[in-house]
Amino acid sequence: MKRVVVGLSGGVDSSVAAYLLQEQGYEVIGLFMKNWHDDTVTISNECPWLEDSNDALLVAEKLGIPFQTVDLSEQYQEKIVDYMFKEYEQGRTPNPDVLCNREIKFEVFMKIAESLGADYVATGHYCRKGAIEKGGKELFQLLAGKDGNKDQSYFLCQLSQQQLSKALFPIGELTKPEVREIATKLDLITAEKKDSQGLCFIGKVRLPEFLQQKLQPKEGVIIDIPADASVYSEKKPEFNYFEEELVFESRKIDYLQVPGKIMAKHQGAHYFTKGQRKGLNVGGTKEGLYVIETDVDKNIIYTGQGASHPGLFKNTLFVKNEEVHWIREDLTLKNGESREVMARIRYRQPLQKATLYQFENGMYVRFNEPQSAITEGQFVAWQDDDEVLGSGVIS
Image (cartoon, rainbow, N blue to C red):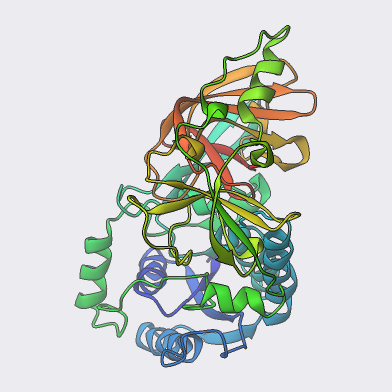
């Protein structure tokens, strides 16, 4: 009998995942990960982890499976929280959920599961796992979940073959309503529970306050760049090589050279991210202001008016070699190779047509249509049909 450790989060998805594994004849153990201690920055009337661990315990009791809580807050602090501060400090916008899956759930947690003699680790993600034979070797595939509304394969885009080989996603074939229906039939306490929001496991964190713990406020200016600024209508230079053109398309515009209007003050460019609307506290403009660029060295935020401001759009991005990750290692591109894919730069974004171009120093992802708010530090994930092939950190 194969043994599976399920990450019971206290939500409906992982509860039903545990039940389905039981039905499939696995020996199931429930584990709740406690990753966060600091209640000062969570929105305090909902102490998320206490309530969640309690719900997880009740689900385990109902299903009659062994249950324990593991405290991973030290590893979480080091691998996720410290990383977030570092990224924000450099003016990048991290994605803690993607990292949490790679570093915590399928790394630290997996090691704990293995120490309990587990053959597999299971989570309540809406995605599926496939396997194919190639050159006498079994290769694992990360596939989109059946529920198009809830597909979470993007969050797992950094997993490796090794991690996938030991992963199970029991609810990947189901839709959210079907999952809730199973939980209701079983009379699980989590059946009606709302989906959790916010950083994985930190619960609802107030991000600015969270960042202010480590990143000191420092006053700077907000400069508004007009949509008709000449920088947006410059003629493309002539290029000798295709790579030069991609470098040009993916570049950051130097707004120091562009005439703009000082709108207001801000408390630190490192608290802001490209595409952001809220928190600027500037009124009196015809259309809402969007952050189009932040300069953490000079502590300036550049904004543009309206969601269609040209400063928000770009069709090419760059990923450094060390940050290119192929789940399907057999498909890795060599220098000079390219591949047409479907890609997205954020969770829930509809897939976009794009082409990957691999060069010596890294990979360019060029979209057929310009994309809004391509944000450094976030992940671009690419796929073929419903298989996620790989991902990379936007640089």
